Length: 374
Ligand code: SAH
Ligand code: SF4
Image (cartoon, rainbow, N blue to C red; front, side, top):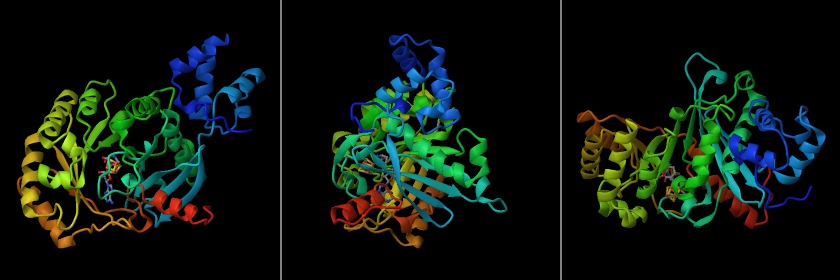
């Protein structure tokens, strides 16, 4: 059937919106629950598989909703640890969804902890200088349904691979909203998507296991602090002074540290939970011991956790990651004051796992006329 761009993805509907839509055509409320059950519990891929629905209702659904808003393009694996799914949207835009496994000694791949990294936009408007996602600006926002469907694609991939996946509703342990895009720049869609992911009639996934990362849109951080949804928050800090931060993150001009840090404190206090400060280490940009000391003071003061991430090189950009010794020296400054800090061993470096890179490579190939296949 021809794709109709005006047709919304069914995965963007909540129990309430779907019930209301069905009421308009005289369908009883329990039908909405049945449909959501087919989507999230039984995970069917065709309307006709929803066998307890009347035939005319299935036809109406097919006419009015899109059941497959994303399609699988390729899965690039990096050892046992990272799977990067490249997905195509209906308008042929490409997005990335990453499965990161933390294998544990003595257990099979089935038992490893899995974190899923989802995208929220095609491209990004924030223009951070080090990031592949921002290089070509923002193409468009993802809809709530497109955001949720990434997780359905993950479930589908995992269903084939592991018995654990088949046995559970969502066979992963954490979701991080750290893929392509600035989630708080697509606020309504991400809130709706995470509400669906969390709801008992949706994926039933605990909000405490969801972390949203932002480059620091202050008014939206404050709005998020007032949402009932209790997701964890990570801030892309990447500079411990305005001078360093604004060199690499244009958003710092709009919302400098004097505004960002109090907003982080408000979030942390209102939600009663620790915020994570992400800090990519880039050689000769933000890896000095002076930056380490300032970061230490900020984290100590906010009672925040610090995640140090060695920079992942991006083709065409000049930035590099510092040596391991320098990374460790930087981390030591924080340890010594008792700040909670992790120095991340970057996963998937070899498969361009950082934000937006696989999509960029694939779009280049497509522009060069090369086929894009699995
Ligand atoms: N837009 C949001 C979330 C997506 S980016 C944000 O900026 O927080 C997720 C994380 O990946 C951010 O901390 C971002 O700064 C980081 N990142 C982007 N490019 C990177 C690279 N080349 N190497 C390491 N981390 C990168
Ligand atoms: Fe956008 Fe985040 Fe990349 Fe900055 S780091 S350009 S906010 S995706």
